[in-house]
Length: 335
Image (tube, rainbow, N blue to C red; front, top):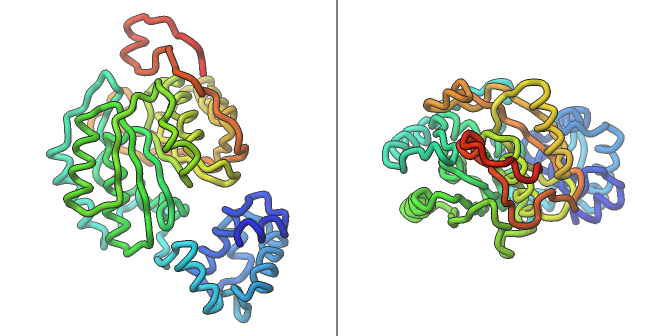
């Protein structure tokens, strides 16, 4: 249905755009069409065309604003997997008070997780940051009813997402994690089993292509990659290969603020991977230590603009981590 409506309206955002219209109306309806357009960044006439198609299918109705019919609610909650109508304030990064138990649980887990391995550019984000990320993922429709992929997760953001989803009563959610650090993989799997979270973690070196079962199956990916631009390029390219080959799928990338030249290199790597940056929040992430990042990094939210591109498809032989460049290794191939 989402694909049919997208095709009928020639929606540039594809089926994902139709889904987000339905989600916005579910959470905010009855809602004026201009508010839907503003919330999604889609022109009013385009949203009106989507509304018309959904009305013809008996899923939307309008009065004081547009809202879902009973059939629309059943479709949203059933086939699409949307149940939660919670709306968070996007103008603040403060942790919602009713989610404080999640922060407490993450604080407890943080005391027991493996120590950082500087050779892998690990630097633990604070518990508040991990939860802030989970809320951000939810607000931008990357959690509920989704298949979410983490490339590296020493910050335990996958666990934060699972705990937040349970606290909010979200619909179905599937999370897969890959990390080179087997200590962390074991810890995430043990935590998921103990807490009953829908998370599976696997040991994997990002220099090597992803296993076939992880290719082309996710709705969004999240990564806080190595501090180097080449490391970023490898992680992002692997992430792109993990996504369903469809315009509108999302990527969430955490990376330190850099010089204008390096920022241009960062954006270039995202664009060459078929990702369009749509939001950059400069001080979103806070870390324990991380002097190289001055304790902070930015959140970059991207939308897939090209369903076919990945810049690194074979084994990567060059350096990725900061320590490797400090040892004077050749730069290898630039990605």
